[in-house]
Image (cartoon, rainbow, N blue to C red; front, side, top):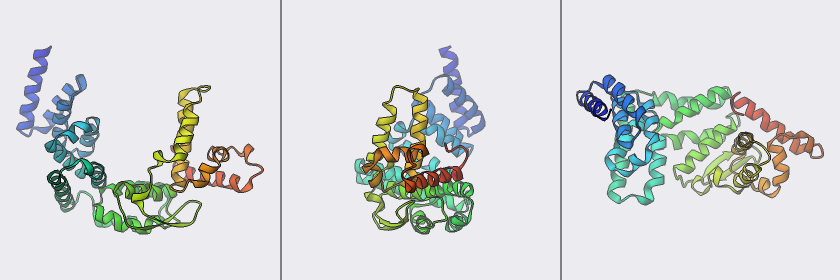
Amino acid sequence: MKDDRKKLQIQAETALHEKNYQLAVDLFSKLYLTKKSARGNFFLVQALAGLKDYSVALEFAQEYINSYLAEDERLVFYIHVAVFAGKSLKVYQLLESLKPYLTASESQLFYSTLSFEFELFEQQGIVDIAQLKKQLHYLGALEPLKQRTVAKKAAALSYQDFVVVVKDVLVDKNVHPIVRTSFLNDLRLLNVREEFDFQSFLNGKMRLIPQQLKGLEQTEAFQSYAALILGDTSRPTNLSQQILDEITLKLMILYPNFLEVEQKQDLWYHVLLNEQQFLKATESYAQIATKLEKSIAEWGPSSK
């Protein structure tokens, strides 16, 4: 059995070396699915990238992301795969999170690699960047489900393009609140230090510095509800997770201002779960609960 595997490995590596990528994918897939490892993952990702199947390659690379972060050569290759999978923005966010741990030479290598790969990506026209920026500029004119589709494609943009294009989106009342808050969170992960105007769900227009914001899961509101819901052993675990998922999605709509939620957690628990029987005496909160439900329904049938 071991000899058969060794023989298959040699055949797969030979196919990869000879750029017979389809055969390499077939053989490395068989090897990887029977015994997963970081080394096997890297071979399979290289073969998939050779076929230009970058999205699938990136999915597999994520399974062993730490192995790519541990070696400069592998991280450089990961950047190539991610950019050509339309995830340039995510690579920049990753590098920003790694920056405190990088040497000056490593930082120069990875950021210059990202710039180089994005230039190649744009030149090859895999995604029409100009058209994508135009779609984002008029995002509010689309139905929420179409907004959702276009918003996902924004990950293909460079840091510079995204920061410019997103300014109008953040203040457009016709853009779904989850798109606005998702883009605001992207700016936070990009470590953007300049001020932005932001149209919030309940508090009107705000002026924010993304780099100073907490991520949703680091907020007191989320952590308190997560502890409350997941700590309740009187119901099945899967039901508790469903309840937390619903609350998380609605907190995302309300992001980033949770001051009142944190001050009135019991009341807002009923609001977030749309428990109208507990909101009869507080009409304004009943209306907020209904408004949140409507926003979730617009976002898509699979949201809840």
